[in-house]
Image (cartoon, rainbow, N blue to C red):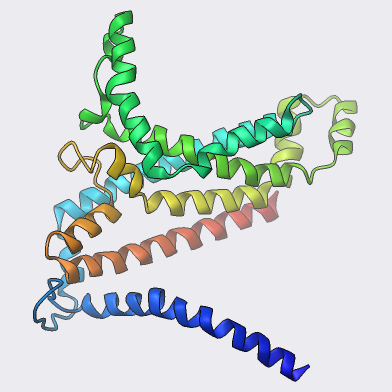
Length: 287
């Protein structure tokens, strides 16, 4: 038995070593450089918490935080609403149920950049051309070129792709609910809306918690969607924190400064995730 346990331990060492080399060590290195003035090349000096203090005084960084939170909150709400509706529809006893589940999961398989370039073409050419031919002036321009509406296009694309994964999680929860509960509720005279709030939603509460936390975390780290659709424009109206860190750190000679920004953002994401888990799990108990 001891030899078997030692064998299992030895099997984990290569994976642990690779994880440390390609994940943990770069993270620790980034934290170290966040206390310096390193530009990504040349010499460096320790500057203490100067980089961290400068982040809170940087208008561009604060704007990126504002956009990222706005995008994440709206997208998280929409993706959970749509995915729950789709999951309930797919869980119903309908024809071609398994085929429809596979079709709805397709967006999750496609690469984000590929989907982004497709949506870029749709927003830039397809919709405006059709709207112009129909005389719909409100849709005859590319919304990605409008500083006030470009974020809406990113939300549409992000939600469309994210719904697939969240739908699968909700389906996993819905299949655990016994049909006897719905039959008993029907006998008591409960309608569809009453069944949802009294039976469905309370019983899939743990899956709702998982979906909310994962969706918010993924949307807070939005990067590929913006690269494919707007590149952070027009101007800097759709520049997310991840994009700002990438551009400033690798293209703008602000490696140490953006490392500090990354550390702050990591802490923000952890705090938001922990807050969501505690609040939603408390709601599970109350329900």
